[in-house]
Image (cartoon, rainbow, N blue to C red; front, side, top):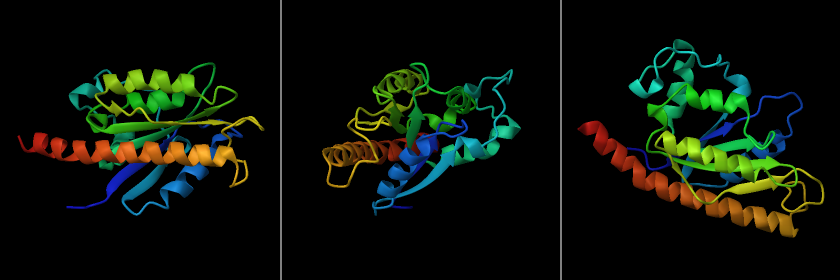
Length: 197
């Protein structure tokens, strides 16, 4: 049995010139400092999923052939961090599509959100995603990271290391990852017990 929690980071933007790469790189750099986890990045730009149109709901365990690799990647994870922009007060269609292709690989696993955007830092999209997570029987955690990509607005990943913005983001990241790992540690043995029944 492994001792490190495996986290899947899901980058939910595929648009040309996407600004979220700086956010994802910031997050991956911080995850790399942790010795108690393993992690991988799932960039939805690299996962060519068609629009979900299966006649059978994934809630019954059905996975379309084109989503099998995606399902295996999600199934391996014990927790998730969703990196998402805010588009028109909502999250990207490509992210919802990737979520909707699966059901069972999501269930009873914790999910954190790193949202980014303009002055609002993407906080509105996080509230919408939490509703989706609950329907999938995920555990959306309270702690999150919100990042503004507007220069001069706190918090912003491009600010100097000794700035209030960097300190704010570091506190937010530490709170989020610690809570995510608490839930992953609690839920993993519970899922394993269910599988033995």
